[in-house]
Length: 92
Image 1 (cartoon, rainbow, N blue to C red):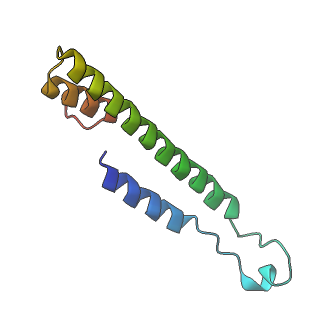
Image 2: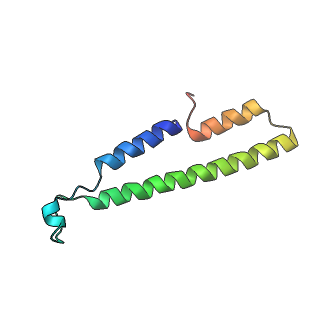
Image 3: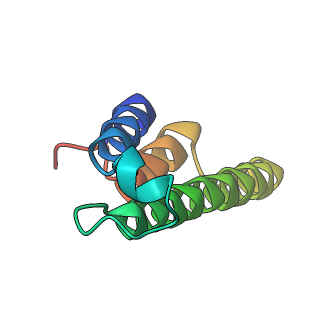
C-alpha cells in the first residue's frame, strides 16, 4: 500500500470518527449518547503508531542500505526488491 494511500485512508477515517457531539449536550457539560469521541482518539493513536513505524522503517532501511553498500555483496536491485516486499508493495 503506498504511503499516499495510507495517509488518505487515515484522513478519511479521522473524518468518519470525528467527534461530533451535539452542542446542547456539550454546552451543558453533559455526555451526548450519540457522540463517539473515543473512536476518534483510538484512530489518532493508530495513526501516530503508523507514523512511528514508518520512521523506524526508514531508519532501518537507511542503515541496511549503508551496510549492504559497505559489504558490496548485495545488489541495489535485490535490496530494493526486499524492501518493497517488506512494505507489501510487490505483486508477487
